Length: 526
Image 1 (tube, rainbow, N blue to C red):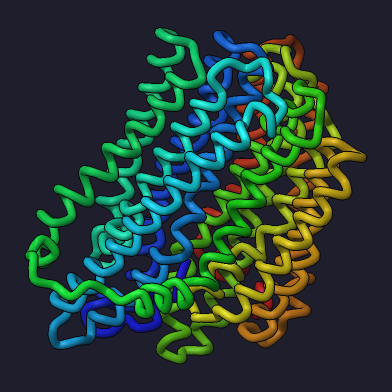
Image 2 (cartoon, one colour):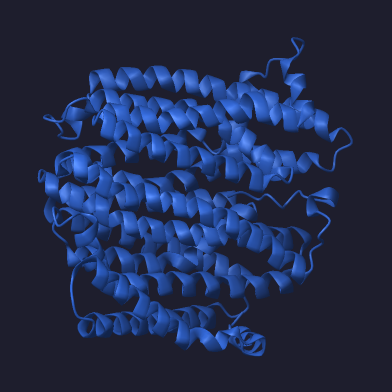
């Protein structure tokens, strides 16, 4: 998420133009690539859980969830450099020596990445030796957790240079290629995890299986694919080049700081609660319960972000060229679309999540209704602000990002340390949802809407109306179906979900009319 269109001119716009058809086509292509990645994320965090529980106990699963969350947090070491690099690569598109300047910047930034990996790698090894995760997180009786945590975090750290190459792929029109390569690595990683699980059954083996595919992906694109696809990068292999100065390197990190703060906060809201609950809650079953419940809320949040990202690039382009009317119109439509999608997904999950949770965990972990409802409703409430977050990153609002997301991180951590010891996992849910509503929705979302839309109050009221209507209707339909469908087990769950989809699909079928869709779009206040 960065202002990737701000400096894009000429070739950056592509041959498809900026008309409505070209915009729709770009959005659809972006969503299709991201949809597959979301599916793989879903299989990693949902479909693999029954396999893990088939071999591991609840304590082992809780330990793996903590290890996986720690690996996800390692990406904050990127420090916003990928987003800074994307912005610079786009700026070079209008230069006379585009390829030469791109190769020079790529080479210099890659050296920063390697320095970060080397320095943080040493610090990471020292930290795990001095403060073993088994002691800090309360997994004293879990074998090999310290080694597995080291492998996971160090492996993810070593894969950071792939971010730089990935940014270049995006700028040079190879977005689909890099996403599919990432998808291949994720799929192979999941297969490797299952093989390691059933052959060895240890946390260490599964962690090695996961990170090995990420490292192979990094080596492939950085060493082989990127230089082949972009021959000008081979200049980086020449011995005669100027080593970037420390002042220049620090300057790049400083300019990337606002994006780093925004990304750190988003990652923290997903991964840090798992570690905090592990450290502050003594009941290991409650830890596993929290880790599994927050997965579905994180997936809703991730889905909204993946839908909002293609919108962000288009809105950033409108902002860059000063087309305020088109920007206002498309921001209003995008905000309503993201909100409606999030509420529809939440409305479908609320009535069926208890049955799915029981099937998913084989009944070995109890279901916590208030925790699930809190997280799911919070995911629906934060949806409009996610488009605001993406648009802020695509319109060079660094000062706004660092103020709002930094404040949100502080509020979240303060509430977590106060509420988790008293309320357990429910306290973590309250901390996440409250920080989202107070800061991201109430501050960041409001500022962006006020600056972008002519009728921000009416737009917020409209979003609230459709959110309540969709969630309430979908939830009531689901509750009616669960009361009417007989039986139990997997067959009943499948029938319930199919019946809900049929009813909701029938109610939404009038939207197939293009004329009706246009009339509804005209109703969205902008």
